[in-house]
Amino acid sequence: MDLGLNGLRAVVTGGSSGIGLATVRVLLADGAKVAFCGRDEGRLAAALEPLRADYGDAVFAAPCDVLDAAAVEGFRDAVIERFGGVDILINNAGQGRLSTFETTDDAAWRDEFELKFFSVIRPTRAFQAALEASDKASIVIVNSLLARQPEPHMVCTSALRAGIQNLQKSLSVELAPKGIRVNGILLGIVDSGQWQRRYEAQAKPGETKDAWMADLAAQKHILTGRLGRPEEPAAAIAFLAAPVASFITGASLEVAGGVSRFA
Image (cartoon, rainbow, N blue to C red; front, side, top):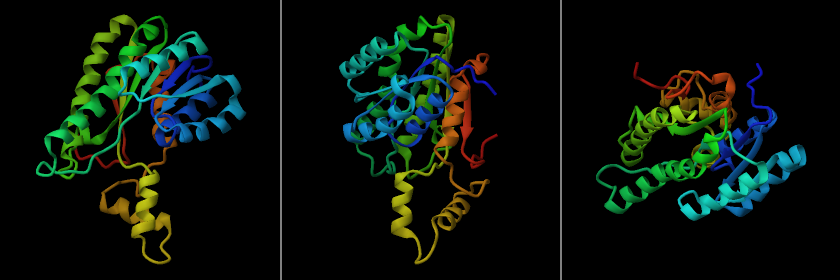
């Protein structure tokens, strides 16, 4: 299927590793021009080098903390100078916090609110005018299944993920008349560096990573019997961002291996 991404200009926050980097690769492979950012300059450079070798000037990266309004605006200016405009924004920055209600103090609540909300608010605000100038504009927000299915050991993250789900719907309504679609994905457990570290720390002698993760999937009631791979949510993100999905807005696509318990 031709997604219609050829020649479109995309921005991916948190793009130097994991799902963000996998999304950058998928978009580039489908013919988009892609700018991505991250906070760690070394990781960013390491991600950019092989992509530049394969895609040349179609890929651009710059360090940016999405919680810093001035930094986001500077990144936006650099992207527009490089590509002349923006058609797609992927809001991907963010991470989870392990804590119960009892162990989450006021400062942790404020920090989590700042991270979850402003990692979406600031890039969206910065790139909105550029997106309005596109006739194929879309925003995709990478969220978590915790938004609908909270976990008590992640009470703070779960509550704020639910808030992002509400914000996404509000944005879809407000921005639709301006020609911008807004959708999101709800992630389950996806294999990443943290799960590699847990495997190394917790696996039994001689236990393969596949076997360890299959056992983990059974414990977590993941119907597919395994964890997700970064390229799988990346494919869902690319689809929702692409013109082929032009009649979809305000939607959330669950990418979680069937682990959800809600209808």
